[in-house]
Image (tube, rainbow, N blue to C red):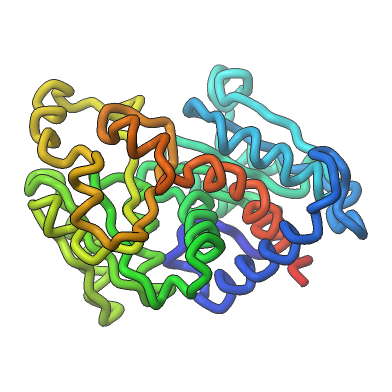
Length: 309
């Protein structure tokens, strides 16, 4: 049984195998409608239970489609609908029930500890749909998207992140180690990645490049990633944070300092960190990026269910 919680804990060869499988599966669906099942229905009869403690659009819909296209089904729950949230039932007991009813569990949570606790008590695979320190399904799908568009291994590309140091960036940093690509990060000094993440990179004999100047960060970039600077549950002083990031807005002027064919990706939802002319422009591939969540998550599910071909 394999879990999918943090990219840093998954062997690089397994991550590459997931991407390769997703590519084959996407290509094989050219003539199929949205809910038509993949050939062989590899997860026929299986059910994925999803639980959301935080709002979700793309993760919720893409996992629903992913399991459906593999021939299985899904049940979506909110924690406040369960005894876990309202009746004080323990995680251990809830995990045993979930393992009895379901074949896999996907969780989007505001607690890294909760995911680890569920992992300890579940007898089915758990997938991290987002936690405070990690968004692994998003970033693995983003790597798939980059390679699909540029048609080169990501190890040969210069990747840039402009924005806050959050869970998506933490997973992108882990990916830079696993896939051996150069990662430049542009953000204000106060919002640089934490010591724990940076020490892990150093421990793995790799390096990330941090700049407090957006122009220097995007120099020579093949891809610029970003995320919403003010997230839904951000508890900082929002006015101060917006002011701190005023020189890090991704607009055409900033894009001009990157490579001529540089592409733009954003995991959504977006805020004021990117201008409309970039977000909706011809260098932006955000809709393709969102769609690819389905294809990569199918292969993640197969990995966790022990059916990755």
